[in-house]
Length: 104
Image 1 (cartoon, rainbow, N blue to C red):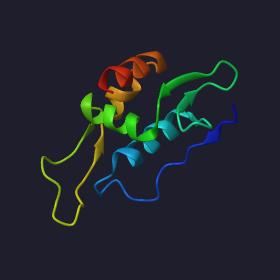
Image 2: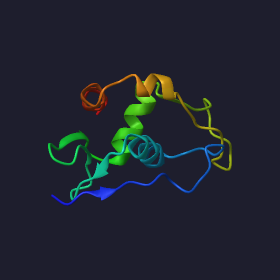
Image 3: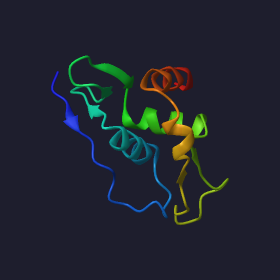
Image 4: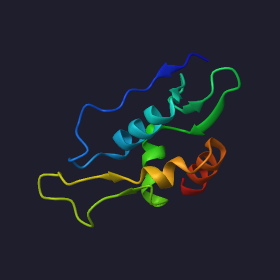
């Protein structure tokens, strides 16, 4: 399986990030890669699937409160997305994969 490097999105954190963009930020921070089937994969030799997609990773981040957003998005879709780095970084890759699977 060919793995592709995941770069963080070009948009600012001061904007309302989509689930896909949140997944990009989290995956890029851990050095995870994107598999050929669109899944998020950790490791280069011993590959383990973290999430079925970047959007699933972002949705799990919201469900597990690794990110916070305003209750209602602004009319233009903007609003701050804040990533709780301490809460996310405290989880191992295996814990993240388990929590993503439970949220999906």
